[in-house]
Image (cartoon, rainbow, N blue to C red; front, side, top):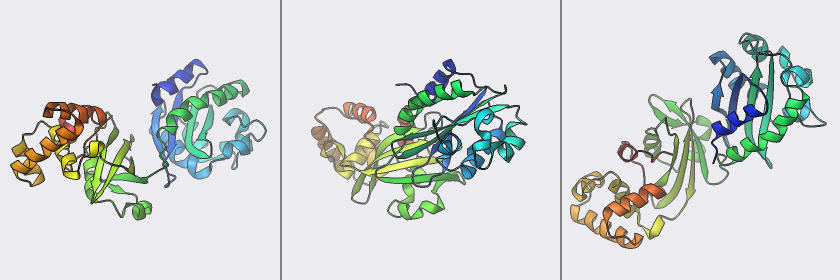
Length: 311
């Protein structure tokens, strides 16, 4: 399946652009996060990524192009926007100084769900005429399909921000985080920046969750926790033992990690092998890695042990 980046690059076969920025809207917090950016300097990227969503609320397309809902462009729809785009500092202090003469913004949504927006800019005036805007309207479904897979609408959604080398919950989302311990946020701080998508399980008291996390370029993490039974009827302790099997640790080493006796760990290994229908601990490790059956630890050892767990 094509990645978001691949889908953006495929648009170059339809129309020309010198710079592009994709912004995703974080569920619940309604904060826009930069998912992809190329061709813009820092000033332009910041103005579009932060300033534009603050000035133009979702639905600005209908305001600028009420009859055909074509994506608005600087060359054809700027004066119809409120405020007129050419009068904003985004245009005068950032884009013009960055050498961009024309721009186009496409809103992204599926059904009633607003997903974000994508900005295109060109150094040539008049690049985003009606024909190009029509092509962009037809092509935006490619991005919306990929974005939908990242838009989480069930379970507990948290927006984490980097702070002092770790991750903390945004202040306006503290209420949703009350049932989740800070141990999880510490564990997520070890996500690989090169492969920033993680799927795993998480244990919180007697509740088990399926965990999905996405790290974005500036270090923000969107986290989704959905209550889910553990695979194969495993108990919480068996799941923890299975997680450490991924690291290649011996029963004695796992016992030290989990503050259990070596005999108890051996019993858990025997039980989880039986429940998973396999006979070797190496098979259990492989099966766990392939299916993301593990619980990350707060020291990052499990994520570091097997390359590719974060993907």
